Image (cartoon, rainbow, N blue to C red):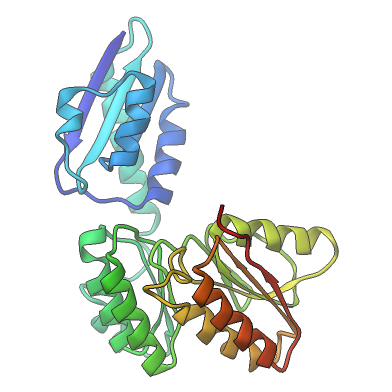
Length: 286
Protein backbone atom coordinates (compact mmCIF):
# COMPACT_ATOMS: atom_id res chain seq x y z
CA UNK A 1 0.00 0.00 0.00
CA UNK A 2 1.45 3.40 -1.05
CA UNK A 3 0.15 6.15 1.25
CA UNK A 4 0.91 9.86 1.02
CA UNK A 5 0.11 12.02 4.05
CA UNK A 6 0.04 15.83 4.07
CA UNK A 7 -0.90 17.97 7.06
CA UNK A 8 -1.46 21.67 6.43
CA UNK A 9 -1.35 23.52 9.78
CA UNK A 10 -4.00 26.17 10.48
CA UNK A 11 -5.73 25.66 7.14
CA UNK A 12 -9.50 25.65 7.52
CA UNK A 13 -12.18 24.60 5.05
CA UNK A 14 -15.80 23.90 5.94
CA UNK A 15 -17.07 20.33 5.86
CA UNK A 16 -19.34 20.90 2.83
CA UNK A 17 -16.39 22.03 0.71
CA UNK A 18 -14.17 19.20 1.95
CA UNK A 19 -16.81 16.54 1.27
CA UNK A 20 -17.08 17.80 -2.30
CA UNK A 21 -13.31 17.83 -2.78
CA UNK A 22 -12.92 14.40 -1.16
CA UNK A 23 -15.58 12.94 -3.47
CA UNK A 24 -13.86 14.37 -6.54
CA UNK A 25 -10.43 13.23 -5.29
CA UNK A 26 -11.64 9.65 -5.01
CA UNK A 27 -12.61 9.72 -8.69
CA UNK A 28 -9.11 10.64 -9.88
CA UNK A 29 -7.26 8.03 -11.94
CA UNK A 30 -4.77 6.15 -9.76
CA UNK A 31 -6.54 6.80 -6.46
CA UNK A 32 -7.48 3.76 -4.41
CA UNK A 33 -8.75 5.93 -1.57
CA UNK A 34 -8.42 9.63 -0.72
CA UNK A 35 -9.42 11.32 2.52
CA UNK A 36 -9.51 15.12 2.74
CA UNK A 37 -10.78 16.53 6.03
CA UNK A 38 -10.06 18.66 9.06
CA UNK A 39 -8.12 16.93 11.84
CA UNK A 40 -11.03 16.59 14.25
CA UNK A 41 -11.27 13.65 16.62
CA UNK A 42 -14.23 12.32 14.65
CA UNK A 43 -12.30 12.39 11.38
CA UNK A 44 -9.29 10.75 13.03
CA UNK A 45 -11.67 8.01 14.17
CA UNK A 46 -12.72 7.48 10.56
CA UNK A 47 -9.08 7.19 9.51
CA UNK A 48 -8.47 4.69 12.31
CA UNK A 49 -11.34 2.54 11.07
CA UNK A 50 -9.85 2.69 7.57
CA UNK A 51 -6.46 1.62 8.89
CA UNK A 52 -4.90 4.90 7.75
CA UNK A 53 -4.32 6.70 11.07
CA UNK A 54 -0.62 7.25 11.77
CA UNK A 55 1.13 8.85 14.79
CA UNK A 56 1.70 11.93 12.63
CA UNK A 57 -2.03 12.28 11.93
CA UNK A 58 -2.88 11.61 15.57
CA UNK A 59 -0.82 14.64 16.56
CA UNK A 60 -2.57 16.95 14.08
CA UNK A 61 -4.63 19.71 15.65
CA UNK A 62 -8.29 20.54 15.18
CA UNK A 63 -7.51 23.47 12.84
CA UNK A 64 -5.19 21.46 10.59
CA UNK A 65 -6.15 20.08 7.18
CA UNK A 66 -5.38 16.41 6.49
CA UNK A 67 -4.87 15.00 3.00
CA UNK A 68 -4.37 11.23 2.93
CA UNK A 69 -3.84 9.50 -0.41
CA UNK A 70 -3.76 5.74 -0.84
CA UNK A 71 -2.62 5.31 -4.43
CA UNK A 72 -3.14 2.28 -6.58
CA UNK A 73 -0.14 0.12 -7.44
CA UNK A 74 2.28 2.08 -9.59
CA UNK A 75 0.50 5.41 -9.03
CA UNK A 76 2.55 8.58 -8.50
CA UNK A 77 1.29 9.96 -5.17
CA UNK A 78 3.07 13.28 -5.71
CA UNK A 79 1.16 13.75 -8.96
CA UNK A 80 -2.10 12.74 -7.24
CA UNK A 81 -1.41 15.28 -4.50
CA UNK A 82 -0.89 18.00 -7.11
CA UNK A 83 -4.22 17.07 -8.73
CA UNK A 84 -6.03 17.17 -5.38
CA UNK A 85 -4.52 20.56 -4.53
CA UNK A 86 -5.71 21.78 -7.91
CA UNK A 87 -9.26 20.91 -6.79
CA UNK A 88 -8.85 23.48 -4.00
CA UNK A 89 -7.60 26.05 -6.51
CA UNK A 90 -10.51 25.47 -8.89
CA UNK A 91 -12.94 25.91 -5.97
CA UNK A 92 -11.36 29.24 -5.06
CA UNK A 93 -11.41 30.47 -8.68
CA UNK A 94 -15.05 29.48 -9.19
CA UNK A 95 -16.17 32.16 -6.73
CA UNK A 96 -13.74 34.83 -7.93
CA UNK A 97 -16.56 36.97 -9.34
CA UNK A 98 -17.96 37.53 -5.86
CA UNK A 99 -16.87 40.44 -3.67
CA UNK A 100 -14.73 39.66 -0.65
CA UNK A 101 -14.51 41.69 2.54
CA UNK A 102 -12.08 41.56 5.42
CA UNK A 103 -14.77 41.66 8.12
CA UNK A 104 -18.50 41.16 8.52
CA UNK A 105 -18.82 44.82 9.47
CA UNK A 106 -17.26 45.95 6.18
CA UNK A 107 -19.48 43.58 4.22
CA UNK A 108 -22.56 45.02 5.93
CA UNK A 109 -21.34 48.54 5.21
CA UNK A 110 -20.99 47.81 1.48
CA UNK A 111 -24.22 45.75 1.29
CA UNK A 112 -26.49 47.51 3.82
CA UNK A 113 -29.62 45.68 2.63
CA UNK A 114 -28.18 42.29 3.65
CA UNK A 115 -29.95 40.65 6.59
CA UNK A 116 -28.44 37.16 6.94
CA UNK A 117 -24.93 35.82 7.51
CA UNK A 118 -24.04 32.16 6.95
CA UNK A 119 -20.90 31.45 8.97
CA UNK A 120 -18.61 28.46 8.60
CA UNK A 121 -15.23 28.98 10.25
CA UNK A 122 -13.02 27.16 12.71
CA UNK A 123 -14.92 26.69 15.98
CA UNK A 124 -12.29 28.74 17.83
CA UNK A 125 -13.44 31.85 15.96
CA UNK A 126 -17.09 31.02 15.26
CA UNK A 127 -18.63 32.74 18.30
CA UNK A 128 -16.65 35.92 17.64
CA UNK A 129 -17.82 36.11 14.02
CA UNK A 130 -21.43 35.30 14.94
CA UNK A 131 -21.39 38.03 17.60
CA UNK A 132 -20.10 40.54 15.07
CA UNK A 133 -22.88 39.57 12.65
CA UNK A 134 -25.57 40.00 15.30
CA UNK A 135 -24.10 43.35 16.33
CA UNK A 136 -24.45 44.40 12.69
CA UNK A 137 -28.16 43.46 12.74
CA UNK A 138 -27.73 40.29 10.70
CA UNK A 139 -29.63 37.07 11.32
CA UNK A 140 -27.11 34.25 11.68
CA UNK A 141 -26.86 30.68 10.46
CA UNK A 142 -23.82 29.23 12.24
CA UNK A 143 -22.73 26.06 10.47
CA UNK A 144 -19.60 25.73 12.64
CA UNK A 145 -19.48 23.34 15.57
CA UNK A 146 -17.06 23.15 18.53
CA UNK A 147 -18.65 26.25 20.06
CA UNK A 148 -19.04 26.20 23.85
CA UNK A 149 -22.52 26.08 25.36
CA UNK A 150 -21.71 29.30 27.23
CA UNK A 151 -20.98 31.10 23.95
CA UNK A 152 -24.14 29.64 22.40
CA UNK A 153 -26.24 30.93 25.28
CA UNK A 154 -24.70 34.42 25.08
CA UNK A 155 -25.24 34.57 21.29
CA UNK A 156 -28.86 33.49 21.55
CA UNK A 157 -29.54 35.96 24.34
CA UNK A 158 -28.10 38.73 22.15
CA UNK A 159 -30.20 37.60 19.18
CA UNK A 160 -33.31 37.53 21.39
CA UNK A 161 -32.65 41.10 22.55
CA UNK A 162 -32.27 42.29 18.96
CA UNK A 163 -35.16 40.27 17.51
CA UNK A 164 -32.85 38.25 15.25
CA UNK A 165 -32.42 34.58 14.39
CA UNK A 166 -29.39 32.78 15.83
CA UNK A 167 -29.53 29.43 14.04
CA UNK A 168 -26.87 27.16 15.49
CA UNK A 169 -24.12 26.54 16.28
CA UNK A 170 -23.89 23.28 14.34
CA UNK A 171 -26.92 24.25 12.26
CA UNK A 172 -26.73 22.37 8.98
CA UNK A 173 -30.06 23.06 7.29
CA UNK A 174 -32.50 25.94 6.81
CA UNK A 175 -34.91 27.29 4.23
CA UNK A 176 -35.54 31.02 4.47
CA UNK A 177 -38.08 32.61 2.12
CA UNK A 178 -37.56 29.77 -0.36
CA UNK A 179 -33.75 29.83 -0.26
CA UNK A 180 -32.24 26.51 0.87
CA UNK A 181 -29.13 27.07 2.96
CA UNK A 182 -26.27 24.61 3.56
CA UNK A 183 -27.92 21.16 3.52
CA UNK A 184 -31.42 22.52 2.92
CA UNK A 185 -33.46 20.43 0.49
CA UNK A 186 -35.06 21.66 -2.74
CA UNK A 187 -38.74 21.42 -1.77
CA UNK A 188 -41.96 23.08 -2.81
CA UNK A 189 -42.91 26.35 -1.17
CA UNK A 190 -46.10 26.27 0.84
CA UNK A 191 -47.79 27.15 4.12
CA UNK A 192 -45.99 24.89 6.63
CA UNK A 193 -43.29 26.43 8.79
CA UNK A 194 -40.74 24.17 10.49
CA UNK A 195 -38.62 24.87 13.55
CA UNK A 196 -36.03 22.15 14.00
CA UNK A 197 -33.50 21.27 16.70
CA UNK A 198 -32.57 18.25 14.58
CA UNK A 199 -31.02 18.80 11.17
CA UNK A 200 -31.72 15.37 9.71
CA UNK A 201 -35.19 15.37 11.27
CA UNK A 202 -35.94 18.73 9.65
CA UNK A 203 -34.66 17.53 6.29
CA UNK A 204 -36.74 14.36 6.42
CA UNK A 205 -39.82 16.31 7.44
CA UNK A 206 -39.46 18.90 4.67
CA UNK A 207 -39.03 16.17 2.04
CA UNK A 208 -42.04 14.22 3.33
CA UNK A 209 -44.18 17.37 3.20
CA UNK A 210 -43.07 17.88 -0.40
CA UNK A 211 -43.72 14.24 -1.37
CA UNK A 212 -47.25 14.41 0.04
CA UNK A 213 -48.06 17.51 -2.00
CA UNK A 214 -47.49 20.21 0.61
CA UNK A 215 -44.87 22.92 0.81
CA UNK A 216 -42.59 24.70 3.25
CA UNK A 217 -42.82 28.41 4.03
CA UNK A 218 -39.76 28.55 6.29
CA UNK A 219 -37.43 26.04 7.90
CA UNK A 220 -35.61 27.52 10.87
CA UNK A 221 -32.83 25.40 12.35
CA UNK A 222 -31.89 26.08 15.95
CA UNK A 223 -28.88 23.84 16.51
CA UNK A 224 -29.14 20.53 18.35
CA UNK A 225 -28.54 21.91 21.86
CA UNK A 226 -31.29 24.51 21.80
CA UNK A 227 -33.69 22.42 23.88
CA UNK A 228 -31.07 21.51 26.47
CA UNK A 229 -31.44 22.77 30.03
CA UNK A 230 -28.61 25.29 29.61
CA UNK A 231 -29.99 26.94 26.46
CA UNK A 232 -33.64 26.61 27.49
CA UNK A 233 -35.17 26.55 24.00
CA UNK A 234 -34.39 30.23 23.43
CA UNK A 235 -34.31 30.06 19.65
CA UNK A 236 -37.22 27.66 19.25
CA UNK A 237 -39.39 29.93 21.37
CA UNK A 238 -38.37 32.99 19.34
CA UNK A 239 -38.86 31.12 16.06
CA UNK A 240 -42.42 30.15 17.05
CA UNK A 241 -43.17 33.84 17.48
CA UNK A 242 -41.62 34.72 14.13
CA UNK A 243 -43.63 32.06 12.30
CA UNK A 244 -46.77 33.08 14.17
CA UNK A 245 -46.36 36.52 12.59
CA UNK A 246 -45.23 35.24 9.18
CA UNK A 247 -48.07 35.68 6.64
CA UNK A 248 -46.72 32.80 4.52
CA UNK A 249 -47.02 30.31 7.41
CA UNK A 250 -50.37 28.79 8.37
CA UNK A 251 -49.20 25.68 10.25
CA UNK A 252 -46.12 25.32 12.45
CA UNK A 253 -44.22 22.08 13.04
CA UNK A 254 -41.67 21.67 15.84
CA UNK A 255 -39.14 18.84 15.69
CA UNK A 256 -36.24 18.06 17.99
CA UNK A 257 -33.89 15.49 19.36
CA UNK A 258 -35.03 14.39 22.87
CA UNK A 259 -35.40 17.69 24.76
CA UNK A 260 -34.82 18.41 28.44
CA UNK A 261 -38.22 17.76 30.13
CA UNK A 262 -38.51 21.22 31.69
CA UNK A 263 -37.65 22.89 28.38
CA UNK A 264 -40.13 20.69 26.51
CA UNK A 265 -42.88 21.80 28.90
CA UNK A 266 -42.00 25.46 28.32
CA UNK A 267 -42.09 25.04 24.53
CA UNK A 268 -45.37 23.09 24.64
CA UNK A 269 -46.91 25.85 26.75
CA UNK A 270 -45.88 28.40 24.13
CA UNK A 271 -47.22 26.16 21.35
CA UNK A 272 -50.63 25.96 23.06
CA UNK A 273 -50.78 29.76 23.24
CA UNK A 274 -49.91 30.16 19.55
CA UNK A 275 -52.62 31.59 17.28
CA UNK A 276 -51.77 29.06 14.58
CA UNK A 277 -51.99 25.25 14.72
CA UNK A 278 -48.76 23.68 16.00
CA UNK A 279 -47.68 20.07 15.45
CA UNK A 280 -44.95 18.82 17.82
CA UNK A 281 -42.54 15.92 17.35
CA UNK A 282 -40.41 15.51 20.48
CA UNK A 283 -39.11 11.95 20.98
CA UNK A 284 -38.58 10.86 24.56
CA UNK A 285 -35.13 10.22 25.97
CA UNK A 286 -34.38 6.58 26.60
